[in-house]
Length: 153
Image 1: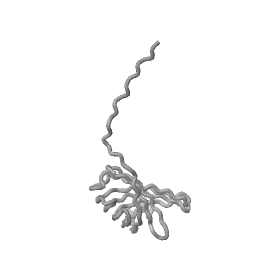
Image 2: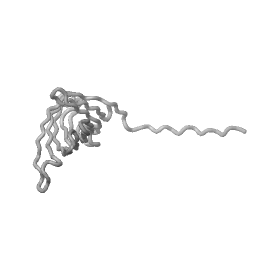
Image 3: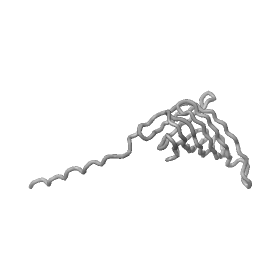
Image 4: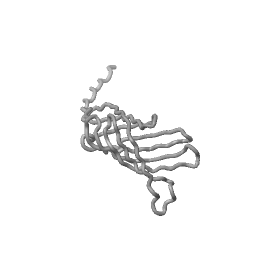
């Protein structure tokens, strides 16, 4: 008995999206936090609302403004925060703005932080930007490492 004829493979479909490569930006930022009074009818300070202002230096030359909500538990070293900030400036020679979303927690002194670009928030030459940022406090400075992707790179 003869083996059945095999079908030819389906034609390949060209992709329209350009392959992007991770890039890394590094630097420091100055941070200014301004505690906000509780809204009418809120219990004082829980959750606390704080305005964020940053000045980024290094591969990201930008300023940002945003808001943070935080809660500190009765257990020492345990807390959490969420924040949104709009960043405007230059990244890799491109001008524009984008938004960052933060989710931070500390469980009995053990920190965990996620800072991501809000999808489709990039404007100008930063349109299509995606990525994640790590932040560390070292020797009294805030240090960032921003791993990002831009279309066509």
